[in-house]
Length: 414
Image: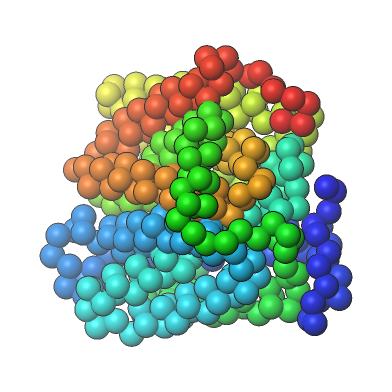
């Protein structure tokens, strides 16, 4: 199908145009990205103000959010396949806003973590429902292109989010970061309420029952592409979370340049955005497998170079930023393609499939990211080694999904 479904409602006389569709999908994804990246410059201040005694524990502001984001996806998928996408999405954004305002007024670290947990649960809807809405409307290479274009806007968030957080800290206390998050999610909810039609065909709605969900999980777990690319994505996402967990400490404690955090982080985020632009332009021509498999192999080589510089004591802030950016570029070429290939045969259970795949990815990635982040000890070795091992593990899962052969397109549209 070549355009988003046009579903009339009392507030939407026609379907969204392509540009607005991509923009709204990107904004939904940005809710989650802002919830993670805008926090990073403030972690030290939050830990100090709320009496966190162990420095590495301040990473829980991010880790708890991401862990609950993973668990929450288990619930949103079946609900989306039963009740549709639109109403659930609007309700979840309102809950996210309420939790943001509670977090802003938290007087203890435990209360803040509780609000962050519920933020994560509600933001899980953005991942599940965005992928489901796109899958309702597109397939094959076209679907990968739409996901890439949405990610291109979405991945601009890491460029500006730390800077936004830093700017807030210059003029106001960290609490105002949460006010911003609440206002942004309410804005997205209003946009969806006014403009987003329901994309799920009523004939495809599935009842919520244990047997139906179990059958869907069985299909996802036994489909080679679905489970293989889901686990490959989990490995690489875990390495990315390891970076997010420890990046503020690395800039401050290893390179003694906390004032350059936003610039370095923005450079790396820019590489991811450039990768999505590149993928959106070329994926329909060359296919998802050629691009993503090549990027994964290149990522492994780049990480070997990073390890060589580190053990040779030649690593500098410049090499760390540039090679991390190159790693992020490769990650950007794998993410949307792996996700599209994992979903390719799941159209009939798109919501539940997106939910289960997202849960597996985020839960496994959270554990990987925590191990990498909590291993920080005044060196970049845990992070660099984590990226290399994650890349090798992802390659193993891809080879399993592809029966040992890379770059082979199964049919012309993928």
